[in-house]
Image 1 (cartoon, rainbow, N blue to C red):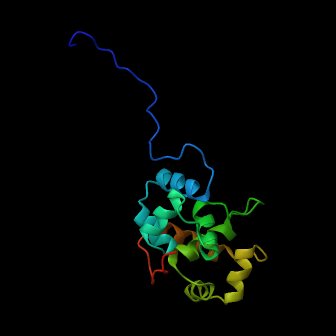
Image 2: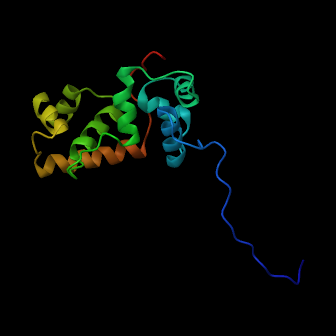
Image 3: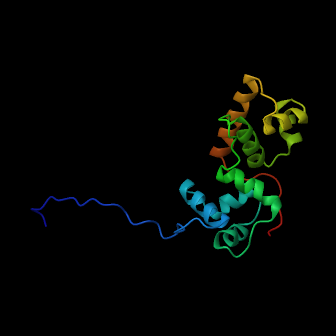
Length: 155
């Protein structure tokens, strides 16, 4: 009505695509994907599988093979270090987002592969310059989630 200037405010109903409970890894994957505003195709590119595979995981029709679990856990943010040092998790996340091996990341940073292994396991602390380069690369990869390299076969 033109004479009534009332604005109703309330909480929006939850998105029906969100799982009601987080019971499975697929539920967690879907919730995190929707929270980030990503499509199944984008997540599939990062995990190096097909969108159909991500869909099957989210619906609980298939369970991820062991070789994909590390990447999924990293995507969900579960691989973070307990001591408050985020660098080992950031290093691993950068590597799988780039689709690079430890050797490939080491070559990109001009260090030895064993140095990258030490960083990822938290045994060694990188120099400040390397921390800054990895943080910068991680920011670039997250802003441009275009997958690189060959895709793994769907499972």
